[in-house]
Amino acid sequence: MYELLKDKTYLAYWLAVVIAMTGDAIARISVIYLLSRMTDNPLYIALVIFAQLLPSALLGIFLGPFTERYPKRTIMISADLSRMAILLVMIFFVDAPWILLTLVLLSGLARAVFEPARIASVPRIVGGHSLPAAIALFQSTVQTVNIVGPMLAGLLLVIDHPPLIFSISAAAYACSALLFNRIGVLREEQSQVRPNPGMSDTYLASLREGIRETMALASIRYLIFMMIPVMIILGLFTTNYNALLLQTFHAEALQFGMLEAAFAAGAIGGALIGPRLMKRRLRPGLLLQTSTALLGLSLLLVIPMSIWCETAGMFPVYVWCILAGLSQGLYQVPLSSSFMMKLPQRLLGRGASLFNALIHLCMVVGVLAGGWLAGLAGVAAVMGYAGALLLVVAVFARSAKGFRELQEELPERKEP
Image 1 (tube, one colour):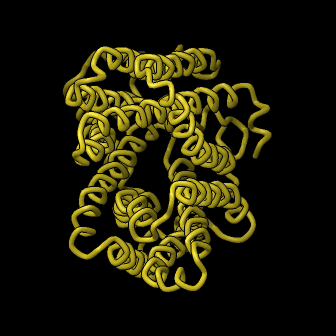
Image 2 (cartoon, one colour; image 1 turned 120 degrees about the vertical axis):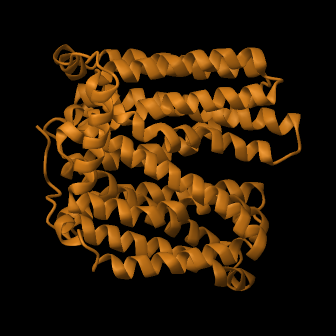
């Protein structure tokens, strides 16, 4: 897997995404910190997450045809430069919460444009390497950045100079754009793409065709329908995870940081062992079913956790965080790799937009429902019920139409 980093093309792509994600994490934590200083209302904090997800959830599906009609390199560079400009504008509005939220929304829109182009370009960038291995490396990197990014943000916040912090985040997007500009295979692709000036009927027809042909594939249909309950519950998990550690299990500051690290270590481990399991023991469909069941089990275990903590202290919570992270890291490998390997190259842009929009829409639903349900039944109870639901989904996953087609997917398929 790590031999991918010896490939100059993939290394440039990997560095570009890592640098952009780090800048994004620094900017997000900084905005949350600024809003928490300006108001005690927790709604503002929730709105930051909501504003980031909303553009992809509502508009993502409509952006797919652009990814296939215009050069992906141009789209990604333009999105990075747009986010750089938005971060520079934030410098002048550090004391205006609603303007900051509006700029976060615009940054989310730029990300909604960026992601389909990034996903659709992966097979060409990976070249002759194993696609599942590339996805595993990317997922493990995401989990690492999720730790390092907030840590860097915390260190930068010590200097208490928001304009400098936003300037650093803007510089990260500029570096990402420069690296994308250096990727040769994307330049070659750009020379072959000619924008289609017709924007109305052709665009709508392309959008309808992309959705229809994507949903016509039994294995893709299976992935999407089985993904919906999982992503809603992951949104619910995102809303209640911190409250569970801090309020239910009463983790102190140092313990909270260690628990976050344990979760990330589990997620990295899941992303790393996922391709090996697909190659040697489990096909994509079975790995997807297994990881869904494992995630459901981890959430169900939240209910007796308080009893276990009375006798074993915080040790069971550390084990639980590793298990929860492991299941989520495992789940992403067959989901992402099967989608990109099964979908025809000509549908990748529109298919990725549909896929991304559904993921973010489900996450938004889960985030909103998670807070409301936790207020009614309590955090632990809601997560336990969600886990039981996922176990039911996992049990019936094998009998759903499309499972067999997904099992026949070749994990070792390589993109030309």
